Image 1 (tube, rainbow, N blue to C red):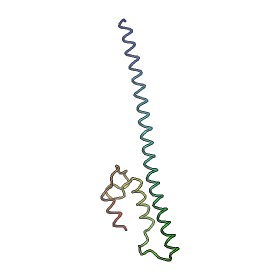
Image 2: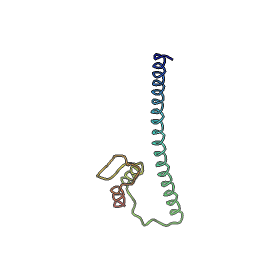
Image 3: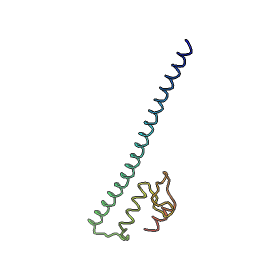
Length: 115
């Protein structure tokens, strides 16, 4: 095997490694999109389950004739709670920025204070 053939083999391997690196990057981006969609759907599912439970409780209260002693929460509070459940900060420190899979004490304090 002469030097030219070795050089051609190394060049060929380099091209294949580049293609594999590109495929790996594409796969990584696709996986990130799937994870984001999964998280969004999980949050939406949780929100819908809560809404279903609350509407079921309201229907049961109407049927039994009992009224809730809780103060009704406004639409603004519901919107902020929904934003927080979707993974965004609602506190004045980081408002609107995405949360990093952890609860924010400022946001939780704000939600509890608003109740």
